[in-house]
Amino acid sequence: MSLQQSLVGRGKFITLEGLEGVGKTTNRELIESQLSAAGIDFIGTREPGGTPIGEQLRELVLSTRGSMQAETELMIMVASRLELVSQLIEPALAKGQWVLCDRYLDASVAYQGAGRALGVERVLQLHALMGVTLTPDLTLLLDMSVKDGLARMVARGKPDRIENEAVEFFERARQAYLQRAVAEPKRIEVIDASLSKDDVGASVARAVRRLIQSV
Image (cartoon, rainbow, N blue to C red; front, side):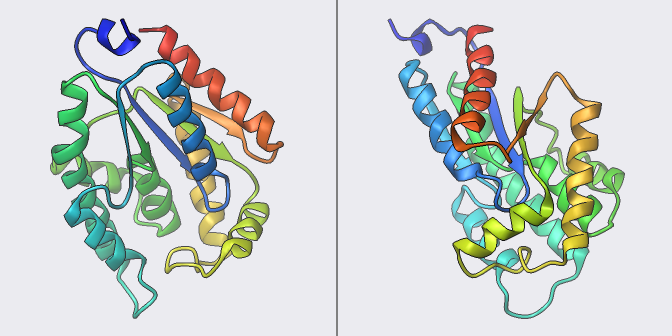
């Protein structure tokens, strides 16, 4: 019998967070391999996106064509997240599947709340008003200096609209992420993404293993 077959009830929700260039894609693949090896039935998704409507909204919000009001960007993110939670995440969790998501609500706290200076509480209140209140079981925050992260981002190709923001934008976002981690230490584990790929991967694997063993 697989671990998934022995699970009773709801699945677990894992999110990956961090600024540009911190290695979310690499570590998402590592987690997927770890869950598969443990016999856990899971789905992987991303934000913004993850649903047909969400992917269209992703193209809109990341496009470099034209400008966009900060409030508009936030509302697009909420709309995409609402679709993702209702159409994909909640149904999967209810069936006992685990869900691994590249970015989630913490990203809007950091990017729109702090980076765009719309206010963290404003971001949280809007999500609550729209009924987006699902909390991850584990959030892995990959953290490194903004300078080093942006250097990695530039090396990988043409930046999107948000990636084109000034260093100060990302500094504000990073501080919001770290403050969020201090406020919720049981949920958010900060991983030093400036370490070697193997060391980062080992830290990520340990955190996920603890969640698996808690089942």
